[in-house]
Length: 130
Image (cartoon, rainbow, N blue to C red; front, side):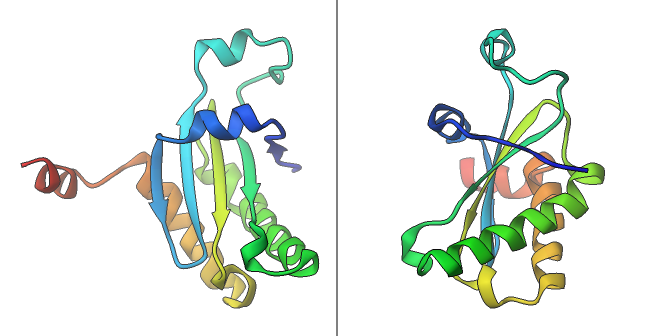
C-alpha cells in the first residue's frame, strides 16, 4: 500500500501546534484535517491518513537525508495501516539517530509515537497545568 504524502508547505505549517511526541529517531506531529482542507479542490479522495517527512540539511548530505527519509517511509508503510487514524495528517521530523538506529527500534519508536499522539496520558497533562 502506497502512503499518501503531503507536498505543500501550507499543509506542513497547518500541522504545527497539533499533538506532538518526540522519540530518539524523529518527532511526530499530527492534526485532524479540518473542514477547510476538505473543501479545497486539491483535497484527495477519501479520508486516508497523509504523511509528510522533514529531513533538514543539518543531518547530512543528500545521500544521508534520502536514506533517512526512505527508512522513515518504510516504517510508516508497515505501521500506518493499523495505527494511523483516518482523517489525520502526520509530519515526521527526522533526528540524527534515524540514520543509524536499528530499523526495529525505529518501528518501535513510531508505534509508541502513534499511540501517544492519539492517547496522551492524562496524568502528565494534569501535572503540568496544576
